[in-house]
Image 1 (cartoon, helix red, strand yellow):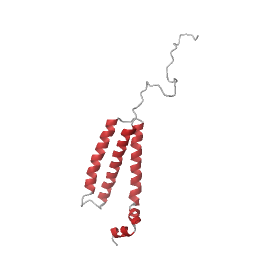
Image 2 (cartoon, helix red, strand yellow):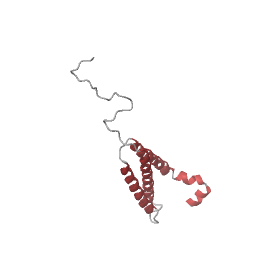
Image 3 (tube, helix red, strand yellow):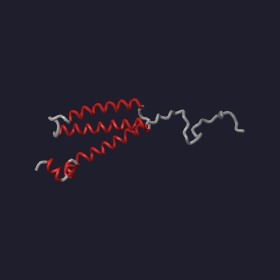
Length: 131
């Protein structure tokens, strides 16, 4: 029986055939979408770096999507690998976009902590007696 006819008769059958690829790919995309903005929250890179990464991953995803849709590649194992690469690049681009929203500049060493004055150096000189 043809795969298209079988999936038309049972809509859940097509998803179950691809579950071995679909579930790990969805989990990997979610990890990228969460991991990249969490690095931005810690101030790892700057906003222009995230913008360039989003632009680069979007451009590469467009190229991979165009290549995956070619007639000679579609349906082959190489096509599946290129499609996986496409979805990972899209997730990275979306994560970079979110990281620009969640970016916090890194705190400098000379700034005081919000907890209080514990980090401020003492103004007493070592030779001066207490009053």
